[in-house]
Amino acid sequence: MAKKLANVNKNICVACGVCALECPREAIRIHNGCYAMVNEDICVGCGLCKKACPAEAIELKERG
Amino acid sequence: MAKTKRNHWYNYLWIWSIIYFALGFFNILFAWLGMIDFILPLIFAIVGGNKWFCNNMCGRGQLFWVLGRNLGCSCKKPAPRWLASKWFRYGFLAFFLTMFGTMIFQTYLVFSGAAELRKAIKLFWTFKLPWQWAYSGSIFPDWVAQFSFGFYSLMLTSTLIGLIVMVLYKERTWCTFCPMGTMTQGICKIKEHKNSK
Image (tube, rainbow over all chains, first blue to last red; front, side, top):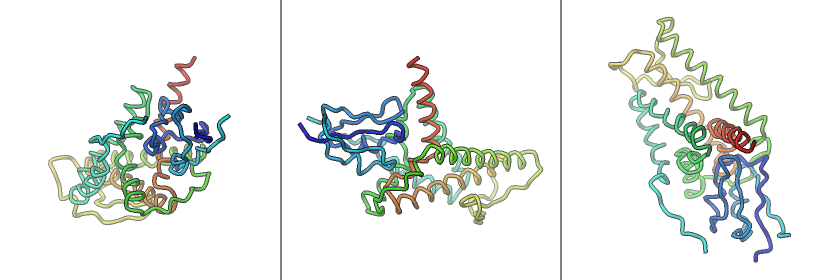
């Protein structure tokens, strides 16, 4: 299991879907057009979504 | 194992964006086709409660991605935080809608005969650009052409703003304050709030 995990700030996310397109594991989906949601079981914490996010709404956090 | 990402026809809608501006360059009446980009996202949001259009079908967003990522025209730097802040997003939406209203009013003035058709487009709501070659009369009344000039101006201006922020910041920085995106996300949030009650 990867050590890190993508974490979306729902208040900043604009639900543009760039992260979902970028994710190599298809671990992100847009929840009802409101914000991006990360499937924690699939996420490998690669950070590609964080790099692509234009709203800077994604951070990488340690798996708890 | 992650699924392989498939190529869909809607992944190539960035070509449509280019065709749209090319058509409007030669005949301004084609500007009306841009209404598809206005109406479809709203239908998706109101009926489906999603931003599927923004996420998959936005030709403009795709164009920024193709230019910024595939052709390397973007600095890929983080944009200032205020660009994605609520006050700026909703403020820009209000400004955009006001300008849209002004454009509709101008169309009405031509419709009612109070103003003459202006064969020009306005960039950034300020700079007038002659565009008379794109219209030399048609079977439609003048107000149809007036709306076309106004709408094309709006589409071109927003694309230029998007291109500027694409170059300066990340590829799809425009999406953070795109008025259609703000509007559809707002609708989706209202729907989500209602459904969770």
